Length: 400
Image (tube, rainbow, N blue to C red; front, top):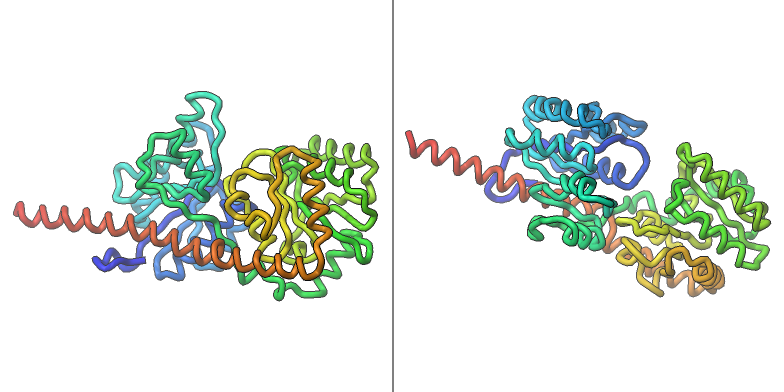
């Protein structure tokens, strides 16, 4: 992480994220914490806790529990002093924020310290008025701003005053040591197939993603009603996270279209590589553009054909017509047609697509590539900090 002018041998990098649960931002935070430790520096993650804290401990990173998830203005204000204390106690060099609520607290905490402030924008944050736009703007005020896709970078440039020289495009990356077909154990496939009640020899259309309306589950259900094949089963993997009304809507739509025997809703899957291996085609039907979208990338890494909506990050991660299909959002007819094309691939066509897809992900979306690029951004800021400190020290010596 060091450049030639020798900044501190062990830098201290703190990432801030609301909570350590499932999700792409959380996974990226954990991945980068591990790479910071491996680089010889000290990794800190500040969050409100969550089920994945133990992963940080296993990597050798430190977790600090603060209510940085809160959007309450009083809590956010109090977090400024809390973060100042943490910065001083741990001699933090860089604060890297991954969410809006803690961004304001962190930015103000860094102003009276030696810590540098940077952010990662994980999504095109919605706003309907100037107040919300101002709230979002803390994510664009970092000395460096990482955009996880060109789509997110363009959004930042269109809507906020920011020097384009401060933006760094770093696509998300996935662990290829986990997402590879040869690593899946046959026993897991058998167990999962039994759990999902899959008929022998059936073709599987799979859509992972939490049950929330903008993910487009209803569009896929409608598309499945248009596919007149008896050998196809659709599996929707994802928790409703308390959205019981939406789940009920989906279940009612499945029954209304007489698809009860063809569509399964699975609450949770703790072995996604095996799930991808069971699938014949993987779908991402988001009605709103995703900042990046890990599902299409993971599926391609497993050599699976992907059908996704033609907007957002998917346009950057899928090679149109080579590793997958891109269809208009909310278009059940187009989605059904693309799924049928994917289902009808010959064995040779599937094999060729799998090779292209796996190579595409390995070359562009590996965890290592993401980590190297992120550590380079840290190195930029550390170098600047070191140069400023050297200048101050030189000026002080000259004044004596």
